[in-house]
Every structure is written in structure tokens, then in C-alpha cells.
Length: 120
Image 1 (cartoon, rainbow, N blue to C red):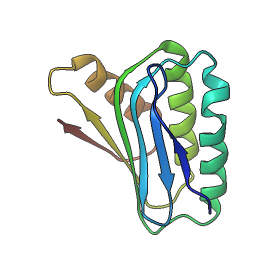
Image 2 (spheres, rainbow, N blue to C red):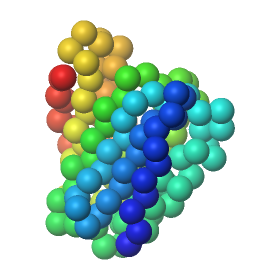
Image 3 (cartoon, rainbow, N blue to C red):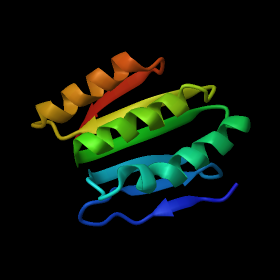
Image 4 (cartoon, one colour):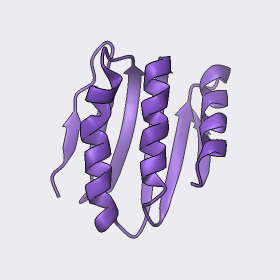
């Protein structure tokens, strides 16, 4: 399975999805002009990964900021991850960022995936 590696930019997050090395991370700022188009390869990759996932998968979100359009797509990503056996989400947020902590808590209530919250 190919590695999905999208370099982050000013308004798009860095995304690494690497089954072989067990790296699954979305980090940075997410406010792409077309969120649906930007996240399409991520959703397609997860769909392919669902067929033969690793025994355990820790999917890390380390977002500094995301806009409303991105929040819908982040929920789509989390919903797709619900079908991955052995999944756990690690939601990282800056210790002073209550908004990002609350966002993670809200997402955790909307999907059937164990969440672990970490500050940095």
C-alpha cells in the first residue's frame, strides 16, 4: 500500500499515512480552499486501508487550527476510521488551547472510536 504524504503549507495540514511504518498523522493548520477536494485522497486511502489494517492503528491529530469546512471533513475522516479494527485516536493539543481540546472532545462523542488526549 502506497504512503500518502502531503506536505503542509500555510493553509493545509501535513498528512502522513504510512501503513508499513505505522505512522498516521494529520498536523498543522487546516483551512484549504476546497476542503472536500483536499481530504479526498485521505478518505480514499483510509477506505483502502480498511481492507487490511495493521493489528493496531494509532491515528494522531495534532492540529493547531481548522476552519468550519475542515471540521466536517475531519469528522468524515473519523467516521471512516470507525471501520478500522484496532483503531485509537490520539488527539494532541497545545496545553493552553481549550478550543482544540473541546473540539477533540466533541469529535470523540460523535464517533465510536477510543480517544486519548495529549497536551504538548
